[in-house]
Length: 334
Ligand code: NAI
Ligand code: MG
Image (cartoon, rainbow, N blue to C red; front, side, top):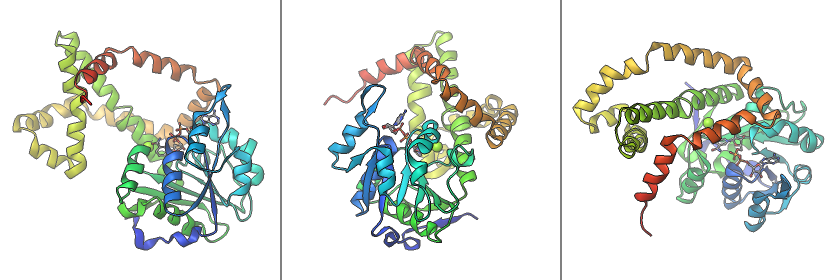
């Protein structure tokens, strides 16, 4: 059984007198920096003042939130813990240009996703500590849970423990962000990275999005009204997932009709059949071998032409156009 840790297993004292530089004040960066600061930890922000020739809105947001905000290299030089929360495809370059020269004995390199360490796009010096603390949640939910006095679950991992204190520090960060209130799983960088990529590619994002799109296409191509199709195969997904989140699949089945439950048993495995499982196994192999990471980094290096084309095409898909219209019709009147 994997080790699950709670508040009593962690002590924020491991961070007393230490400064954490949060590098990148985006989704995770802003949520994590605010939670750490509210828990009494000294946080500074490392950001780029301009991005693509314009003022970087994240720079402005960090300043407005009252953080000491400096360029990435300065922040890395001032901090004990350098917590990298940039988009993963930029970590390698930014680490080598601005952070590497400040890494060494007494320093900790931290992240919320092991991608760049596991796939060796960042190779920290052996005398530095290397840790990961990751929320199992989008940033908005993470901050909301913190403000409500609870927290979202998280993962922690120690990759290098040169100081002998790396585990204390990573648990202190998890506690300061209240992940230990919900519970934190102690894992390896590989487990987090491979599972995260597998989940998002096969079930959560890839997988579910295609299921919804096919469902919508089949209904509308058969002449059913798109608004009804949208409600049926997109909108209601949340209601079903909320029930599973609350009490598992059986709880969901106990709330839906017997007709729906019977349909699930007899038709579900015909739609998502054993061939899907075989392809999922191949996907896991491609993730573990580094083949996925290699192809994605090549795409990123070229400026993401295919990603941008896919993003544009999705915006033109009827499920998105119908969705925007339906949501605006049913919006709460303020
Ligand atoms: P993000 O997309 O919000 O970006 C963070 C910041 O990076 C931006 O605000 C921007 O100031 C800066 N940035 C963007 N492009 C840049 C460039 N070309 N050069 C320099 N700076 C640039 O990032 P997000 O989604 O918060 O992800 C940060 C880390 O957290 C990643 O390692 C990700 O895997 C991890 N993570 C993210 C989760 C999420 O819910 N978004 C959940 C768990 C982990
Ligand atoms: Mg994920």
